[in-house]
Image (cartoon, rainbow, N blue to C red; front, side):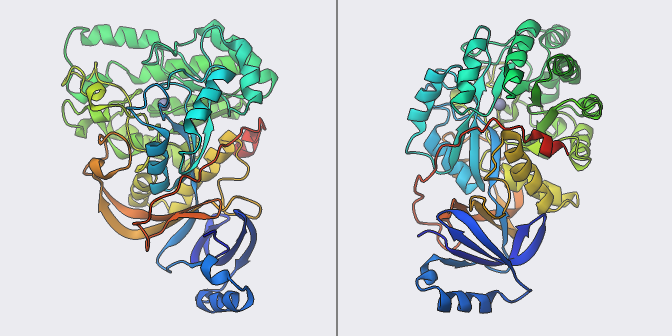
Amino acid sequence: MMLRHLIAEQVLLDGEFTPAHLEVLEGEIIRIHRLSSGEGRRRAEIVKASDVGAGAGMTVVSPRHQVLPGNVDTHVHINEPGRTSWEGFATGTMAAALGGVTSVVDMPLNSIPPTVDVDSLRIKQQAAAGQTFVDVGFWGGIIPGNTAQLRSLWDAGVFGFKCFLLPSGVDEFPPVNGVQLREAMTEVASFDGLVIVHAEDAETIERATDLTGRRRRLSHYADWAETRPHDAEVAAISDLIEAVRETGCRTHILHLASARALDIIADARAEGLPLTVETCPHYLCFDAEAIPDGAAEFKCCPPIRDRGNREALWDGLREGIIDAVVSDHSPSTAEEKHRGAPDLQQAWGGISGLQVGFSAVAHEARLRGIGIETVSAWMATNTSLLAGLRRKGSIALGKDADLVIYDPGQTNMVSAAGLAHKNPISAYDHYEITGAVVGAVLRGTPLYTAQDTTSALVPVGGFLQGLGSPELSALRR
Ligand SMILES: [Zn+2]
């Protein structure tokens, strides 16, 4: 049953909670009535009396619950086709729906083939068709030799192009060198596209690994993290900023882990360079000192760093230097995660947390006195601006009715086995979170509600198309 009317005491409108009645038609928000406190019940009676049949399409949300825009996660590795045993469209997007993420943008690598030309994009779309529970879009990829493919990929609807400056972890998605990077950025700038970069410097990591002892087994997380030091991020980001200066290409730094790069990013912005940056829930929720030895479920690249760094990333968010928070959901099988155990060097690098990311960040934010409306800006509004998803990211007229119902008072202990991800491995296992997603709506279709958790989700997700529009400048203003 499609949603026609939603009435709630706490609806996030223009950054503030207010009582409101949303009218929805065919998945779009067509009218917003701001109400006075406690007016909801009477309003529901009026709607019932005036709109025949509205009873079935009307939802009156509990006054304890908050209505937020659906989150937009622009950094997700679904891995299908090719590595579907790691994650797939059905399981990945169900996890997203249950976690309050109503749009995901899938990364071009770890699936086989990687999304580096239009043919491989079509293969991916065919694999996804009919089995997604939320809306799904796709990033393209930059690898050596595919510059001529980028324009056609952009025209086919990708949101931008990912590249690596060091080995990605999978052979079929090789990194680019400085010359290749600039060539690709010049091409992407010619159609005002977006380049998104895994920024760690290979040489710095080689040197650090030599110092740590290449043949030693590293089971202590902080020891392994030293092989991918802060300097590797700072050096790569410095070079990248220079390339942005040379090419003028709109550029986004993926999964920033080191707070030591915040100053150069802020300086580049002050200079007017078109640069944005994201971080991830695991860098905000965990610190290296507290991770048990050999716990490969926490291995990710760049690594989780120390407690001081974690708090400095929170400062970077507060100050608006970091624009967005995304899951970088990058799961694998247990076999890949435990390869060479307890040596962390051999384990697959990637954290599984799509279903947990939003509520975990909201929980940690609250502990630091930051409200859910600010978290929503990082995880819904700014991510949709980054990708140019004009219909997503906030509750406003003409936008898709993508909504999350959030219960700030509910406390749960995460069980990795209880998550919808394909593999029951997650850094968030046994992590206690206050605040829970209890319902979600995708383009007017309720996916599930707190009152109705048993009904089977229906795969009503569709494909998102990149618009190629420079809304990034709106984000920067
Ligand atoms: Zn990633």
